[in-house]
Length: 394
Length: 215
Image (cartoon, rainbow over all chains, first blue to last red):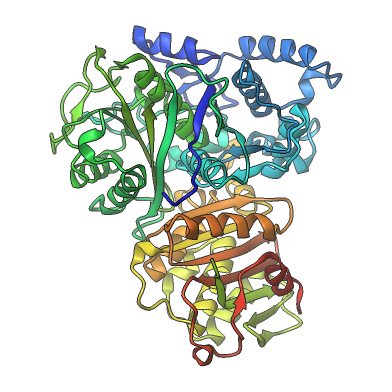
């Protein structure tokens, strides 16, 4: 922290995944232990059956259609891509009751995505959408124009840490006083592009993934979108107040597609976030880890959490429920983690049965009511990137 | 806070400028891969992994290589150095290459060595590995070069004491067209005579735009 830094509060949020189109729908499903990952047989997604977590298309379209009408837009629904619908539905829902105006020059829009409208490379879409739509800034422009945001959106594309980097960046611009409000939204869709790529890495588990379990053999892919509305003012914030108190990123400088061997670099990012928030590992009540369920990722995270003195803190991964939502993950999982802080309720880490080979983590194996005041969210991704962020109950 | 641009490189139209000097120009190179290889050889760089990289990583790698040849990253802890890059087309150039491997069911051959480069921040990963940089990093997307955005982003990193030095700039590749401009920004005032070819410039939008436009 430096002098004059403003506090940053979360006013409202939304998440869209296979488990629902709002934060409440999602957290309700988490509480019931519903798993959104299903084996899908769809030759347009992949030649063979593949387990994925998909957003309900009919419900999405119905919701989008209502929002189009509410905004008095005349553009036909099918001239918006699936991902654009995710962003518009999610941002529309999150802005409700916040008092934050997109048209205010003090409001910033930050978009996080890894692949944007990548499905438009497929032949079936080429006649409907222009090539320009593949560019992430064009996706940003469409979202900006829909809501009438004044400023060109800031777009982050930084692999699986994109979501946390987006929240952190927005928080920094609010802390410094550059803006008063920020709408941070992250989204990615399931596409043949992404499935075929992860398949070629042999990284996809044939069954729903099992983060931190000894028998984990790979990840599950998911799609989704998450939005957080942040502000330096508490006026319209939901209770209890949630504040972003620290965040940092780091790079492994080790391998472009494999994590650090030691976990040292993720641990640094965690330590920097704690230092900024003026807290220690003893203050952290809960950790929402990245937990992709690939053997190397989860092992690296165990080591990193150990190095930061966090081995005993209850930890879970949400990826056993809705898979790895890539550029959405940091935001979707932050919103779910914050619901744990708000409600003093920790969700079971789906897929976890037997402690991993290190056996050092305190993985949450059953839903539990516990008082939580400070939560750590972490992520790591291709390119050797790591990110950590802290959410504190005021 | 006074931040200084202590070294910079600019690559476009088969030309390479490092600080104030044109170090490479050859009119008749058409393919980006040939251009990148020629610069790599002329500069006598030895890093076999270069040949495995996609075009965006090759471009970013070369731009940073040339920046740091003029001004070494000495005396900094690895986590005190950051990398913030931006471009317009993300990794679309390689995305198209990956898509070509899956669009035909009879010739379905997606490859991990192509797919791994379908993220724009992989170039940051390659730069970090090469120069042992472990600090903050981010990849930002904007339609055209946006000096204001980069400046604001990097200044926040310094203001938050997250970096003491930061590489930042623009790395764009689409087909055989490329444009890179990368600079090293440092907090501590560098000795004036320690830098070849570049008078230290203040890190601000005007100077960024000036470097981006000169030829």
